[in-house]
Length: 115
Image (tube, rainbow, N blue to C red; front, side, top):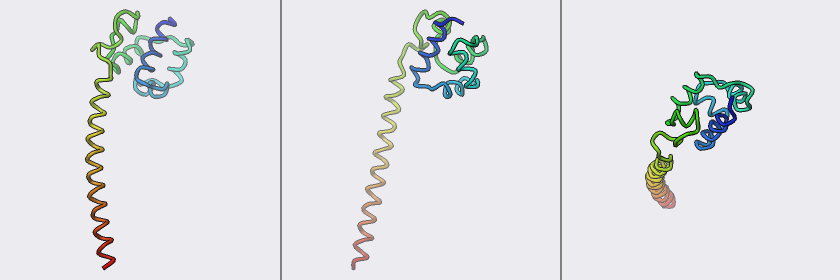
């Protein structure tokens, strides 16, 4: 198997921050098989390539030849990350509000015990 294809698979894993185990689970292969592919000990068959293409929004031409952009949408996942961050910040604010309410309740209960 071409070291260029191996490098593109590694680039894909790096881009999404995936370990071999995570990548193997995502594409539905066993980790030892993926490891052997990445070491060049085993060929990456059409089935595995199709699983990669189905699991990620990437260009087939990029995966097979290195031509074009990696992502089909030509967008980095930073916009998705920004959306996730905004959602998480909103959840944090909601949790802080709940925490503040609980702290007020505790203070009221503590004062009532003193009386």
